[in-house]
Length: 412
Length: 166
Image (cartoon, rainbow over all chains, first blue to last red; front, side, top):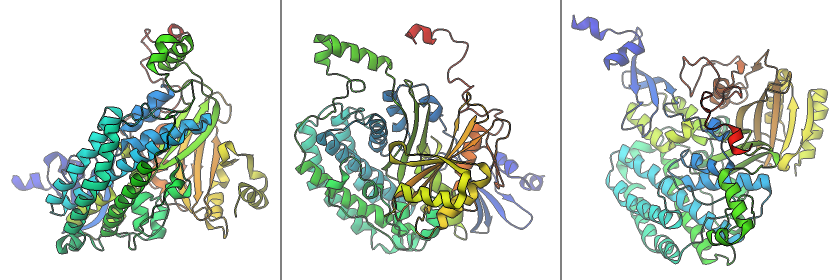
């Protein structure tokens, strides 16, 4: 009786019984996800196993699809920022500012230097918090828990800075179209300085000491899940994952936005594109981000922190109470009654995982006619089965964490 | 130094009248082609000795319900990493015949982008190994990004445009 139950031949039967299915060739079908502690997000991988070796894999995505592109077609521009928060929620400010810059490109607004520098600081902080999560979770998945605890304290400090700058921690909705919603407060500046000069470099150095030449960590990651540069380009890899394969493509350098050309920084490159290289590239990038933040905070220009863009930037509250014009603009912006110019824009920023692109078609209405997010995760996660082929489950888990696949960004 | 004009000249000599409507909105070269030519053009641009458009940034769809015979549009974004030039290629499709060849043989990464476009617009990519929905659930019987599906519940009358003076 019991044997009959175990001889399920189809995947769905096996999943229903929560059992691996044994196929005719002796292969086993195994279900990794959608809610598995090692996937760090909701996506399913159906793996065909030959003993302990992965023969074939197939992903099912879309578990947290929230139809952002459709919702955006009903919303005035400033309300779309909250949607971008929820794409890559590990580095929301990058997505927020990317969207603002897209609209500014459409409107051809010149943002003051101070606002651009503040944006750079916040975006680099976001990059650090993104990479910190990715690398420390990779440690957790390969059996090293303590590094995770050390760096998460620093991530907490970054979230405190977000809180000081915009009031929120995770889904930040930071900045406005045309600049920042408020200036950096002295407390925020003090906190940023403390982070980049005192606490973060120490902790990061300690983190690297724990991992970089760690025998166990290297055994688990070196030559695991490698990809050639040609293949990576073909698959549409961007960001640290592409750079780990040896292609020096970084949007910050290729198409400098938000005054990135004012800063002096390096683009770390890997050799093999394996898990270890991805780890190293991300770590090196954090040091470069610290460098950028130091330069930006030291040379923070004086002046306004928002552009004179009445139709999109909310007037100061004081003015709204006193001046008729400000009151009208306030009302029109809040009600979303302002028509954007006709145009077609693609703007890309370097997100935590790679090129985050915004393709916006405006037909002259109050909302976008079409808005498409180029989500780096969605594009490079395709390569996952190919990278896992011939490896074991434990390697597959390490590869997935090192790719930093974020479910929110994957599913939009 | 490769400029947009170099790309235009090259494409016109190679493909003649099948590439049309050259524009440069916000500096990005944009042109239109026909569905039969798309694979050839992408392969040509990718393998070109000097242009080297070796990176497929994005594929997506757009719906224009009011434009007759051109109701749907598939938009390809290519990037030449070496020359740092981007192009946008558009292919218009009539609603009666939503077929376009897949570009997976040229760029492997097109796979999911094409599936996403199919999922949301119902554009069928011929030759695709797995032309199925990717983000929405499989038993859905419509393509939600089409303009005829309003975002909000059509039975609601407390949010009509007239109330907002539109």
